[in-house]
Length: 88
Image 1 (tube, helix red, strand yellow):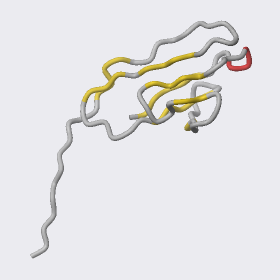
Image 2 (tube, one colour):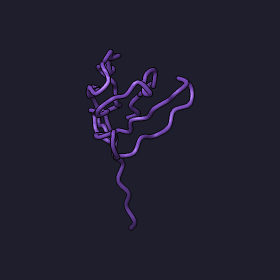
Image 3 (cartoon, rainbow, N blue to C red):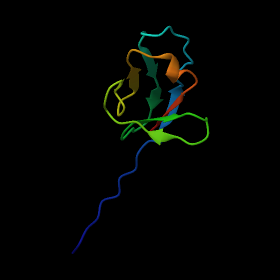
Image 4 (cartoon, rainbow, N blue to C red):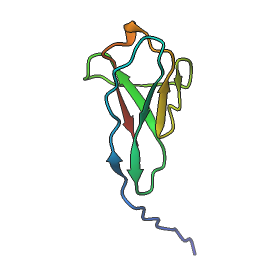
């Protein structure tokens, strides 16, 4: 007989949202999200208008785009006002 397995996971809950940051040009921005439950992955996204978000890729100045902590290295004035969010 054919068998199948049912896996039931604990729902994911974001327990701590990332905080807004105020930095100087050249600083590194570090955003962290805390979660509980069975997290299967993280994807950080960005938006220039706060409405349309796009996934980040692991390339300078971004690192940790698929982890709980995103680092934006050496921020510039051109990045002022960009919104970031983490999808889990």
